Amino acid sequence: MPAQIIAVLGSPLAGGNTATLLDQAIQGARDAGCDVEKILVNQLNIRPCMEIFYCMENEACRIQDEMTPIYEKFRDMDGLIVASPVMTMGIPGKLKIFLDRFQVFYMAKYFREKPFISREKRRQRKMLFISIAGMDIDHVFEGAKMTMRAFGEIIDCPYWGEVLRNDMDTIKDIRTRPEVMEAAYRKGNELGRLLAGESA
Image (cartoon, rainbow, N blue to C red; front, top):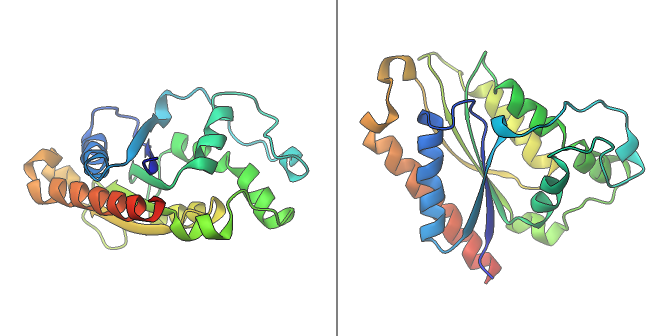
C-alpha cells in the first residue's frame, strides 16, 4: 500500500501563491509513489475548539462538524504537508482553528497518556511546512514555525522540513521564482521517497 500523505492548504486563497507551492510539493510526493489527499481548510465548515475537555475522557470531540472524519485520517497518515502564508506574524485564523481542534490528540497523549500514534509510527511520520511572507524582515517565519512544530508534537508527526519564501509583496507571483517552485517539488519528492521507503 502506498504511503499516505495529507496536504493541508491554510491559505484563504485556493489558487494563490501558497496553493501553487503546495501543488508542486504534492506532485513531487505523488511522483515518489505516495497517495496524497488535499484538504482546503478555508472551505471546511468547522467551529473553534471550545476547551470543554470532553475529549479528556473520550477519544471523540463533542463538536460534530467537518472535523470529525479528519481525525481518523490524521491517525492513519504517514506524512503531512502544511502550506500557509504568514499573516500578522503567524498563521491565518481558519488554519489556527483547524489546528486547535486537535485537542483530542493532545488530551490522549498528555492527559490520558495513551497517544493515538504508536512510538514506532511516530518515528516514521514526517511533516513538511511550506510558507510565504509578504515582508522581507528578520524572523518573519518564526511564529508560524513555532506553531507548526508544536502541532507536529501534538499529533506525533514531527516537523521535518520546510520551504520558505519572504518578500512576496515585491515578488507578487511565485511562478516568477522557478527556484522556489523547484524547491517545493524537490522537498515534496524527498518526503515522499522517505515515507515510501519506510512503508515498504
